[in-house]
Amino acid sequence: MVLESPIFLSLLLLLPLLVLFLWWQQKRASTATIRFTEFEGVRQIPRTLAVKLLPLTKVIRYIVIVLLITVLARPQFLQSQERRFVEGINIFLALDVSDSMRAEDFNETNRLQTAKSVIRDFLRFRASDRIGLVVFSGESYTLCPLTLDYSFLTEILDGVEVEMGDQLKDGTAIGDVIATTTHRFRTSDSKTNIVILLTDGENNEGTIDPETAAALAESLGIRVYTIGMGKEGGTRIPYPDTTFGKRYTDFITYLDEDTLQEIANTTSGRYFRAKDLHSLKHVYTEIDKLEKTKFKVVRYTERQEMAVYFLIPAALLFALEISLSNTVLRKIP
Image 1 (tube, rainbow, N blue to C red):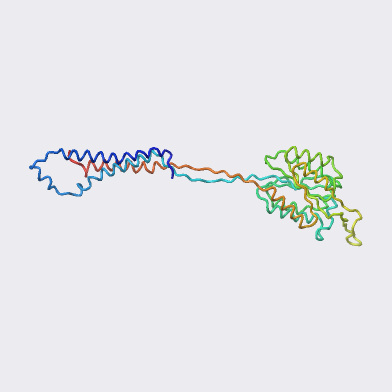
Image 2: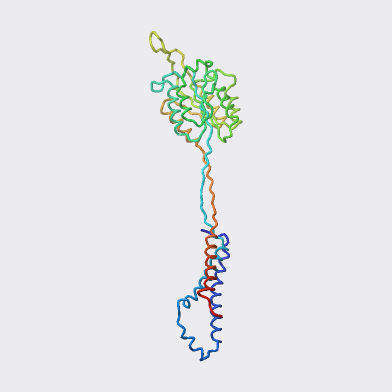
């Protein structure tokens, strides 16, 4: 409990002076009184309970004065609280589904399946962030807009296959997917918008080049984290053969690291290279550390006036003092 106007407590210093003054005045009056022998019998009046309680009215009066002074000091009860407001960020996952993502250089599973597994783990560690999914090959397509429904997003992600690339134009359109996600962010009210772009190839399709798309993203404050997937030297791509089973093409995929690095630099993001499953998991862990959900903490203090808890007893005691003074403790003038 605190006092809003503690200066009024200084009035309590006058209370002892008031008591001394009244005592001095009463003593002076009793000294000046003429004693008559015929009133000697008055001294023999028995001290009844009412006589013994006569000083009680003065005590009550002093208590009332103390309570009223406390009311003037405005006692208050303070209760400090804090409220946390979540400031989630917006994240678009841009996932390459071109034919080269069939390559099996990640623990005997193809690149796409490995990427999906790591992304699922990434989603489990996010909180209060809106996340969307865009897939691309020779063109880009938004599978899931920004959402807080991670279970729905995971379900969409589970259905992503390389065969989707057959429905899109063949190739790798890195510039187009950056432009698509940038367009999706145009109505965002979040202060932080990022793109996590994973690919294993080089830009060879699309209507906009990666440098121009990166510059557009940078102008809107969008950071792009690029991930280059695949072993150095490239690898061959498997394909099913109804006669001989799985076979491999002579085509070898290559990664354009320079372009991915330039995109990241332009947008104030970072470029990561993932050569195996462990390094890919580490990449998403690093991004998770760099782009944490933001929390705004607001602290406030609630004040509750306590004066009424002193004023009510003061009023009741004052009424009691008046009642006693005019009834059982009434003095003869």
